[in-house]
Structures are given as C-alpha cells and as structure tokens.
Length: 228
Image (cartoon, rainbow, N blue to C red):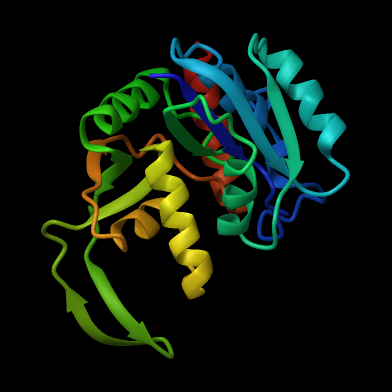
C-alpha cells in the first residue's frame, strides 16, 4: 500500500538541556532526525515524508533530508503546541493517494527498518499497529511521592513508535479528538477511542526514546556498538 511517513521532530528538548531542538542533536555523528529519515528512506512502500519541526528550523530539516538520501517528496512544516497537534498538522499535508500513514518520533533514532515494515504489514492486516515492548519492571501507582498500589504488569506494554494506520482511520481519529477536545500522548490512543483494534508489534528496548542527558549517553553507547 502507498505509505506516507510522518516524522515528529518538533520537540524543544528542554529536558535534554543541550541548547537546541532535540531532533537536531547528533548521536553517533548524525542527527536524530537524519537517523530516522535514513531508515524510512528504505521503505519500498514510501511515497512521501512529512516532517514537523520547531519554528525556523525548516531549512535545517530539508538539509537533513538531503543527507538521508530520500528520493521521495519531503514536506516540512512547523509543528504544533503539543505532539498531537504536530501529527494533526502533518496528517493534513499527506497525499490523498496514500493508503497508510506511519508515524515515528525522531527521538527514537534506532528503530530498525524491519520494525517499520512489520508495523506497516500489521496495519495492512488490522488497520492499526504500534511498536511496543512488554513492561519489564514492577509498576507502582504514586501520588505525592508515596506509593498507592502496585500494578500487576501482566499484559501491560510500553508503547513506542513507529505506529502505522490506514490513513482514513487516522484522519477520523484525529477529527474525533479535535471535536471532543481529547488529548492523548500517542495516536494509537485516539484510534482506540473510536473502538478500533490496534495490533501490537513487539519491538526492543534498544528502540529507546531520548529525553534526558542519561538517555543521550546510552544512545551514544548504542551508536558506537552498531558502528562496529
């Protein structure tokens, strides 16, 4: 199926505290954005890429797309106030000829091509699919730094990206959220609220999201290992 990719790269990176937008921080000699763009560039189904960035970073994003070797149209747009807003803006720029949309956070630079492919295959089959890993740690519900209860982790997964959806389903989910003022931290949540099934594609902890300086240190170690 013809597939549009949305790369969410509009985060400020305030918790990373490196003085520049997170997606433009280098890991293993390349920006996080370039890592993600290089991976999606190899998708056989890809017909276009839409990248959301902070204001005034559009030219930098286009330069990263050139470095990544993309040979499909690349659309760059300023993101919104929240991640959900950024995805909605990008979704509005996707081609009506696309049948699927795969969404990925640039802050996860190590998502392998095979993971994108498996999410797309699952979305073709089910309509919606996300990368996720089983919760490995004991979970505690906490209020004001005090434990209220221990939450059984059986059947619990940690959502990641990429996440893939049939385009019309994703459009309906975002429109439903907009009209009802629903906020969510990932697109699968919006699709679930329509009563649709979302399939899990098991991923790896190596597909970490870089948020803090500690995450960046771990990412540099992973990049060094992958480069060997």
